[in-house]
Amino acid sequence: MTPILELINIRVGYGQSVVLQDVSLNLREGEIVCLLGANGAGKTTTTRVVSGLLAPWAGEIRYAGENIATVPAHKRVELGICLSPEGRQVFPNFSVYENLLLGSFSKKARLRRTEMFDEVYGLFPRLAERRKQKAGLMSGGEQQMLAIGRALMGCPKLLMLDEPSLGLGPKIIIDVYEAVASIAKRGLSILFVEQNVQAALMIAHRGYVLANGHIAAEGTSAELRSSPLVQEAFLGKKPSRQDLSEVHRA
View 1 (cartoon, rainbow, N blue to C red):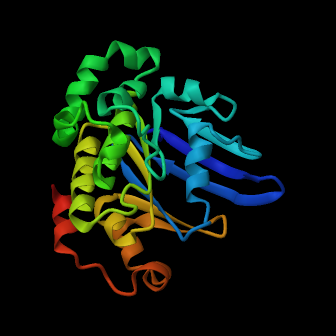
View 2: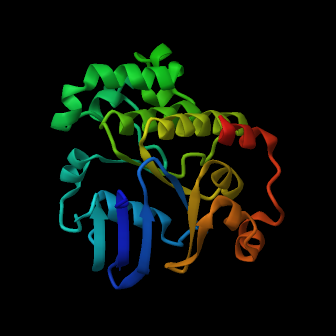
């Protein structure tokens, strides 16, 4: 089966600084794949390259078998590539409803707005309860739900989540990851960036570790949990959080 996403020998950076060097990874339909690494490793840069916000200097971006390296960002949304960005980036003076509406600007998404509103509100009932509330008055967890919901309004086939647990309490992290697991069961492919390595490896099928702009390790979640590199750099010990293991089985 052709992967829905393939990065092949991607090289990119900012100005004269190289951030990613010969990075290759892939994602199959219905898979949850995490991208791990310390601050500055190139995780967010990877999502920017896939979404079209940053053009690669070299390499290929293959989506459903086609090289889309030169396809502009708005066209990639039409193709089904949607991003929930780091820091949530909701529009604080707009209501929940208005924020979600802005996620459905593509032609395909406009045709399915009613259906997608129902889906997002079903996934995140709190958003339905607060649909008239200004996004800037919501908690961090609610804003994260809104950011994910806004990305879902674009009718993605590939959903990218950049640091979905950043700044959230343990209970809200569980809620967010339960939603991610539910989304994947509907057939979406999910690529997500995380620094919360224990949480990420509980929910992901596979993962990649970025270090100094290179892929330093890859494998199934179980393989990465037992990897000496991951153990030493991120975990310190094997994860044992029962609550997140429940999320994985949900």
